[in-house]
Length: 243
Image (tube, rainbow, N blue to C red; front, top):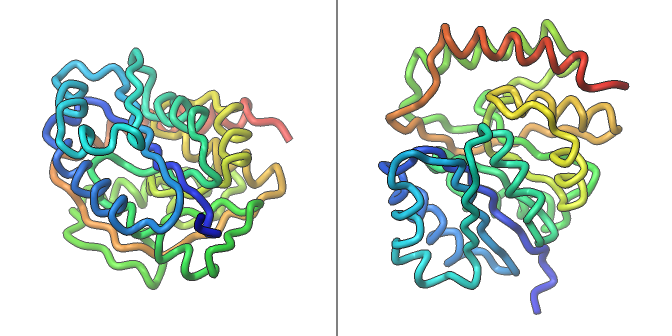
């Protein structure tokens, strides 16, 4: 048996029919390289297209049904889908990431190597597109602007001072993940802010990590609409999360 820690990948999906191939390309490459125990937890969050069918029929799923779990639930929002996945994760560490594989799951191998395969259980490791060692490919101006607007809102309304709270690529110990997501009450786009806010208040370290991140066509983010939603969600978070 490997002495390296096991890991659960948690991937939320909502109407990702056009990205299922990308998802499984990333998962397949990860499963071929990860040197220890692992599992993949995919949460279909009430998709109204054929995402679920494509997930279940794909050859990678058929090959790794003992490793890949697909959970189907009514739509709750991205935060709710992640909560379901994290609460069902069983390995030592939990990596949350997006279905479009903008950051490939193999990136976590570099993170593990950087800490000699002994990450700190009281640290939440978060991918940061603003990290000076990150490599960003094909990022659209409107998406970068949306990120800057949102980060400004976060910094002005909360004590969080991270440079990129919204990158979906985040690593938690199993216990930390269950503690934070178990208490989560924000299920929309701003769920990351509540999670990191709760982590900070609990005394955990939030450490931004470099990664290779590639913008994928078909982003669901709309700058004006979503910035307003995020603003109100963050205002609510200030009252939801108590010191």
